[in-house]
Image 1 (cartoon, rainbow over the protein chains, first blue to last red):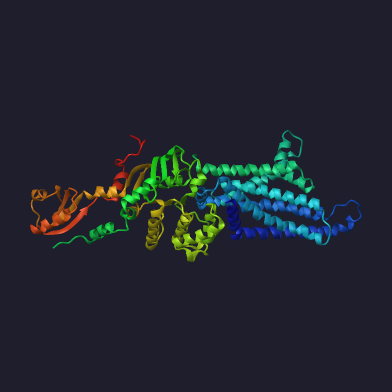
Image 2 (tube, rainbow over the protein chains, first blue to last red):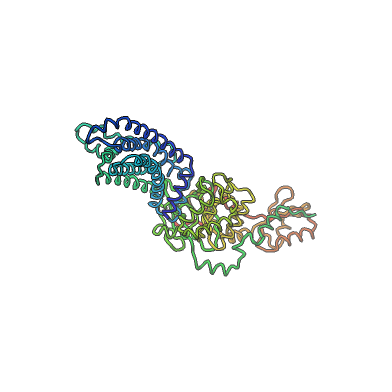
Length: 250
Length: 353
């Protein structure tokens, strides 16, 4: 049953021009950034050869690309998730799901995995760019894998937050703006924690950016993965509770 | 010369036409036997609050297999709320619902398998084609993929959508969209069908189609449909429930309502009327009141051939009858008297004194 829900969600995504435009815009901008990085690398390469332990192409091309990808996704994911549940509310299709023998958890997971499927396609497109470098040079596979894993987790976290905010309103625009606001806030919250003031470690822990940076350095830590999983779990639970509340008295 | 209002004749004729009251016309004992065996919906004391306001209060319903229940009420009376609660889309604040013997609140998955629901706004995804949408609906009702395809084909046939199956729902007219909604509700062959205003937005031909469909479905399943068209309820349902301000004010077999109507009055127009006492002395007459233009309202006992005898008598005595029409307390009058703040005929349990 959950498979039917995921499939329907994917079909709805790919049937809408919005999804294709998002894929196109993301690919175009990231391809441009990728080219700039490759160009930069080609210019500094002769000088790098002078140092024995110089950084390689993965650090200079792939990692900046993935870092830029998070910013692009910060802008695009809200547009992708905004309609997930608000559209169901607006078109009054939730009654169909509520009156059929599926659990609210299944509805939410179906939506979530549906959007993850789409984001997975986007991630594959992004990952293909640095991977294509392997044709001409050697990549640091460990570092690249860490970066891609980090990006995947960030995307999954964005989507979970977007799904929740989409469940709160009938208006997709409202969902998109609030998602963008929330994600950006959580991204930059650690800016306040540059110093060693009281509570700054809490701000650092909450920040989405802080945990992602570790992946960018090639450090894959269980604590960082756990942070993203908790983040996702929290927002999915909130979404389930929100939909449950629809049926109950309020 | 005798002129009997042509309209009246047609009305009476159609009311007696077989097929318009399928459940009444089928053998009563057989129907009752089957009905006794299975209660498909049993709802007790449903109450639902929105904040401090009660949308429905103490609504109790039972529906047996083969029954079609017409659900009447003014806008905002609580029809949609009740249907949404019965469908499981809304939880009642208090009360109990059993669908085919399965408790909807304790075992929602099992109970909902036996339910088909067409909400007030057909729940459609405009970006899907008709068959994609129906396939999705079949699968979330737990029908395996292979069987789902045949079920979709069947439902499309029943609702005359086969030619539309590859069209995007977005591009369909309101009437077709309504039919897609209906196809969705009957797809998994539910025991209980809940239809919230199924004929809204349809043209007369489509309305006829939907009514025929409901009638067919009503023989094997049980159907609750809400409507604000009294004629529709009268022609389709075997039982009528009227809800007003969140409370059931009437729940009765249509046959009982018909019987109540039978013993009423006739209106006769006479060009050369006799004195009132002469009319009152006629066999079976209980009360006569003179109205304008030679019209008389005659209340009489429930005799099957009263009208014929009255007419024969009027011709024989040269009263020159020019009009004769039965006067019946029809559903509309009952409905209006109940919803105009009148007394409830059949107060439900726990109603406010």
